[in-house]
Image (cartoon, rainbow, N blue to C red; front, top):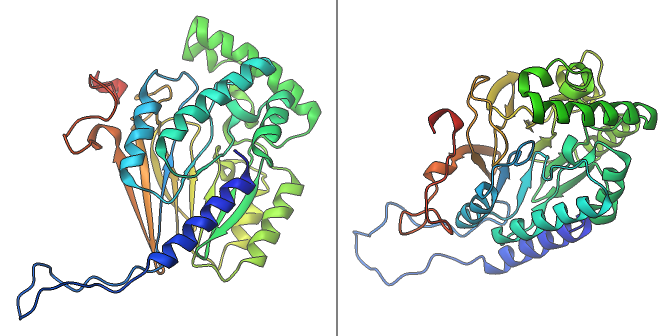
Length: 331
């Protein structure tokens, strides 16, 4: 699934929404009505979409498949993530097999899915090459219903530095598997700045500053980034914040696998937890969820929906026979 296809699907959805717009019609007469107010004709600028969080970095079987069916129940116009969609780290054939597995499961949502890369997806040159073949650019932006989306690549570093980080990461992953998270935290990879806040090149910074400048009439901007790049001492992300200063915007990130809300520069910065990934309850709220976002005119509503609470018309979890463990801390 490439970005061009996603944009086309969104555009088709928009046209269908406009075509379906009609006045509220009914046969009830007299004073009393079985509703509290007249239903308004749908506004083609109303926007509803879903964000899901990390599902890898120790994926727990069955959770994302269920989440995909649950997201389908929400009927979003599209779904986007904060990256880490595959485990990564393998050879070409293994990477392709992992992407095909994700594609198959994401198709259960029944809505356009916009791909966002995380460190598991974009760390090595091979991973980036496979991504480009399957999904196009590593970072991009799009505008839909006068809302601007900036999708960042926080693994954007020189080839030399990437080789070092990739080698360190491979070793750290093995340490994690054999010795656990405490030993992992002591590895060179875990202690590198790129592991925590990522890297954004000047070229990427230039790209997004131009995208913001060229779309300064939008209703809202959503910044989607895997790692919390603003926490770095020196970062291109600060240029984006300066360019966005006069616009309403919201930032979403993942990577750390626990939920955290911050108000920064008067804006919402929201770190999502997991949608099937490894959980770390000792760090904070580490539970499976998705985020439902509605844009109505200038207003943005954000609803954090725990997978535990999303059930079908039978009050069952769609597609599963037993209740999964959505929060490590309570299982």
